[in-house]
Length: 439
Ligand code: UDX
Image 1 (cartoon, rainbow, N blue to C red):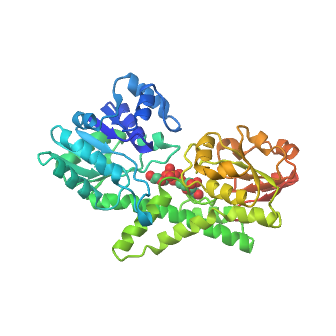
Image 2: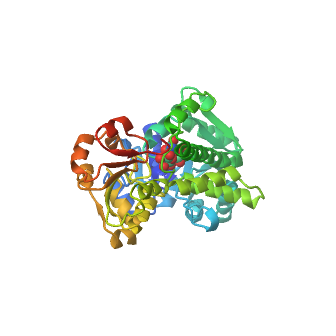
Image 3: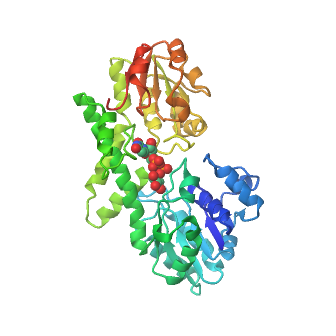
């Protein structure tokens, strides 16, 4: 099938490469000329495991090509996916839909025969209808329909998730769109029961409901962790005990420093806003958001407590800056809040991350210039001579470090484990002081 994807972010680029891998003829467009020039040379703009070989293989086979022209992408395709960014830009948590609407205006005059336009970006309920109106206004003769097909891939495992989805949600009332998207997605499954059809509004809302539910689950276990700290229980034991109830399940129940990333914070706020517009208060979702903001500072409080509130002149190492492992994405990363807060307490910071260091320093902005913050490429070099080490993001290479070596390097043997990755008995036997989250 002839497919176009507008947008080369995590969702667009992965979708384009994956559709090409399934034998479709795919054009992927982005208005960012530098990005497209890079992609034409095989430079992948994001760090995402498995994406580079997938893109290169499909470019080499001629099934995947890139353009800066949205009109060209429109003229090429039977199905056009809109996968541009919808960042929190408006007031009060409203996602910014300017890029999406501009893409719709760009493609409208160039649609070629009956075209299925698919909103893949996460967008508020009713956006499929708004895109549809924009296209009709621009091109009253266009033969098209707008469907909603939210994406559930996780960064860091995006290729795997896209290729092997738990389900694909397709929101459309149009038979022809249904047939076309069925043909496109069926090869991803052995059987078609995981292709779920519904109306566009339900599809749009499903994405928000799923993300808000997952966010609430994380805030719930973080709340439990804080209670564990207060009453002397171990949240890792409680989590295992809870999670072994089949109704609860043991996935996605890990306490930590709060969720970050491009989706949970933005989508929870957007959902609360949509609900408010309809006179409904999503109290659980609002609490999840509030708890999450507070959770980002839990470790800072523990650090202050340990050093008796006097942090000025201390040097701390911090491992892991990305909002989660296997990505260089630092959007809403807890490390940003933690670093800003410790820096303003007068702490000297030595930071380390396998991929996200440069993005992180840019995001810190003024803080990076005005405070003593150093980016180190080696985690042991970062820990050399420090008063404490913080684990912020649980990259594989930080999960079982050489603690004997660390004991020899650090000037004070103090560990703050923001992801409950380290074995307390082991590190205490080596003379470290250990604090985790809720244990
Ligand atoms: C999420 C959704 O999982 C995905 O379906 C949606 O399409 C986009 O948003 P992503 O943002 O890539 O994906 O990350 P995810 O792996 O879900 O993690 C989100 C955040 O929650 C991370 O900061 C992670 O560290 C945190 N998290 C996750 C926890 O703190 N505990 C957990 O048990 C799981």
